[in-house]
Every structure is written in structure tokens, then in C-alpha cells.
Image (cartoon, rainbow, N blue to C red):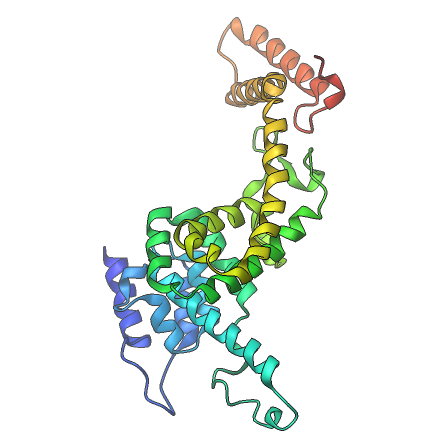
Length: 318
């Protein structure tokens, strides 16, 4: 409780909720980034919404940090911030379409934000990763109903999602994890390092996963599908996205049939981890020590021969 109160007082000083006056407005972005990096900030610490106040300061680096390290951001302020980026995106598109040689002289007239405002794909990717883990579909749909009333805005979002789905459709389907995706845990058993791999993908600027894309897309369509089917310009886009989704559904149905055949490997993995844990805790005392030691050695030998981790599919028999 003391830490919460302290951080809230710090934010009230370095991040006042009142709109800064034009010109010289004192603002310590370094202090805000520091407390965000420490993961001690809550969305409820700032009146009016943390993202909204940071956006007033044009501090997009801190906004991205908040989308990574703050657990309780409200869906309404996330989608409101997304709509701000969406408006900037459409503004840039309109400018590129109507700009002539005579109009291009006034290139700074669209906004005073300059190049600090992130592009729509970059910010949308951060939103997808956050909402997929920390948001409920009910709250997300409520935010869409409030801020995404313009069907043209929805089409802009669908265009970005469609591009990502097209990239996933062009990739080979990975059936086995690569050596970079597995590691030995503290017990010496091979396990997937999902969290590390996901963090590395975000650092590399990779696109969101297909699951994150389709989950976000479903919430959008739940709210805006009726308006989209009444808009002829969106029909081709919806058909393209359906063409990406249908093969994924068939693939999932085919892979679901392997559950029974691969169950033996799941059990072997669980047994290997259990045996390794027992071995790490040590054997009993007295006369049982020698027998326990031999049993553990035999289990370790069998575990090495089975090569649990990177499964050998050639051993599967039907």
C-alpha cells in the first residue's frame, strides 16, 4: 500500500492530469519511464486515464511501455488511443492522395506531432498483444461500440489485419520446435521457452500471432459486421480474410486427430519431469539409498534414450 501511494504521488507531480499549456510545459518523461520499467504503475493511479495523459504529452515511448508493463489498463482508453492513431493514419493517407506539387510545400500542416506518432501497424500490434492477454472480449466489444462507429475506420484496421494474415498464410507451418525454441529446465528436461520466444519476437518487431489477430478480428466483426456487409468496398477485403481463415480451420481439424497418437509423448514428458524432480530431491537414508540411486540412474538412462523434447515422429506407429 505504501508503494502504491508513493508511486501515485510521484506520478501526480511529474504527470499532472491538467492539459499542459502551449509552449514550455515541464514534464519529466525519464521519471515516468523509470517507474513504468519497474512495473509499479497501475492504470488507476492517474485520473483521466494513464494513456490519455501520456498522449497529451506526446510521450509514445511511455505509452508502449505502459502497454507492456501495466496490468490494468482499461479497454476504453486503449481503443481511444488506437482511434487517435487511426485518425492520424487516415490523415496521412488523405494527404498522400490529394497532395499536389503546389500543396506539398505545407508538409507540416497536418499535425504538430511530427514523426513521434507511431504508425498504425506498429501501435495496433502492441494493442493486439496487450488485449489478447489482459482484456476481456466483452469490454473490448464495448470499447469498439463507443469509438469505432465509422465503418471507414474499421476498414482501415481490417486492411492491416489482412496484411498480417497474408504474411502468416505465406509461411511454412512448423510441426516441430527448432532448437532455439527449446531449453533444458532446472531439472535437465527439455521444455518449450514460450515466454522467451514471444518476447524475442516482439523485440524483433515481428507481427502478432495468428491467434492474436483472429481473436481481435472476431471482436471487431461482432460489433461491425452488419455495417461492413452494407459497405460494398469492404466485401473484397472480407472475402480475402475468409480465404486465409478457412485453411487454418481445416489444418486445426486435421491436427486435432493427432491428439491421441501424441498423448504417449505427453505422458512420457510428464514422467521424465517427475523422475528428474525426484532425482534432484535426493534418495532416502540407510539401506534404501543404494536402490534409489540405481533406480534414478536407470530412469536417467531411459530418459536419454527416449530423447524426450524434440520428438522423433518416425517412432509414431498407427
